Length: 204
Image (cartoon, rainbow, N blue to C red; front, side, top):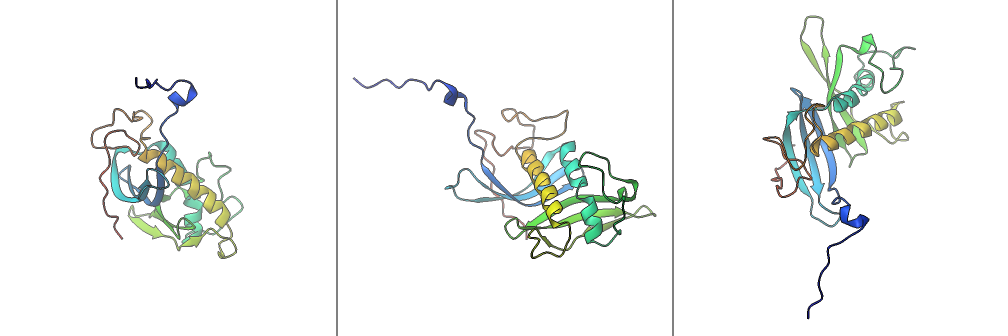
C-alpha cells in the first residue's frame, strides 16, 4: 500500500516562494513610467535572463523621492552648482532646497557590476526649455574615486535601486498598489505566478 502524502503543515506551509534575483543595469523614469534594463534569475543556479521593459503603471512616489535624493550629486558632478553651507538637504525625507528645484534626476546606469554609477537628469532653464544632464561615471570605491561624496552617493543609489526592484515586483502609484495575483492590464510583475515574462535583448 503506498504511503499517503500529507499536506505540509506548520510555519513552512505558509512561507512565500523565494524571490527571484534581480540585478538592475539601467533605470529611467519617463512620463511617470519606469523604463528598466535588468537581469533576473529564479535561483542562484538558474540561467540569467535579460529584460528591457516599460512598466505601464505610474511610478510610486517613493521611487521619485529616492531619485530626488540624487539631485545634489548630479549638480556637483555636472558642475552645475557649487557646494555651499546650505547646499545639502537636512535629511533624506526633507524637501530639496530651492536652489536644487530646477534639477531632476530621471534615472541612472550602473556599471562595473554595480560598483559605480552614471546619473541621468535634467535642468529646467529660465526660458522653460530642459537641459539634459549626464554625470561622469563615479566608482563607489573611494580609494579609486576622487569624488568626495562617493560613499553617500552609493547609499543613495542603493536606496533607489531597491525602489526600482519593488516597482518591478508590482509597487506602483500609492492608490494603485498591484496585487501580484491580479495584475493591471499591460503589466507583468516579476514574481507573478503562472505568467512568465518574455525575455528581450537589452539595448546597448
